[in-house]
Image (spheres, rainbow, N blue to C red):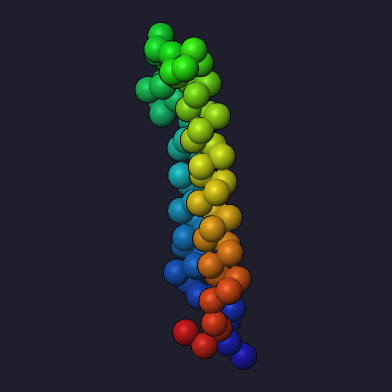
Length: 73
């Protein structure tokens, strides 16, 4: 029986998890905690409004590609 999740796929999911943790960790958030506004929105809030949904979109696309990929590869 073939393993449906090869090690590379598991490593990719771990990488997504680690990147998500880095995105919400203090040193990384501190980079965006400036007195700058974009369209009247503070930079940190803009980071969360754009960065977080963007990361969710990347994971969703990855999951969709895996779902439609043939198992024989």
